[in-house]
Length: 114
Image (cartoon, rainbow, N blue to C red; front, side):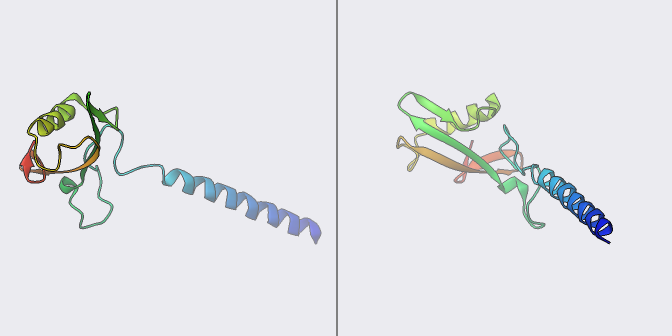
């Protein structure tokens, strides 16, 4: 009887390890990959991915430093043009989280086209 109990215990333990291993890989796929501004898939069924843009940038005396180093040069140029406009609220030297949305092929931050 003890041989059957040990065998059953080993099978259950193996199943638990395999199940945990599969679950750990299921959560690696993020909604926004490196170098991407917008999510490539919604987290909620009614979420519009065109309103999910996020760019984190630090404004210093010497220029802009992007948190995501893999952003394309097109995105970096858009953000630099946005900061050159010297809009109210974006003149301080600090870290900004720019909420970007896309509408009709154009990008907007605070209703300002970039």
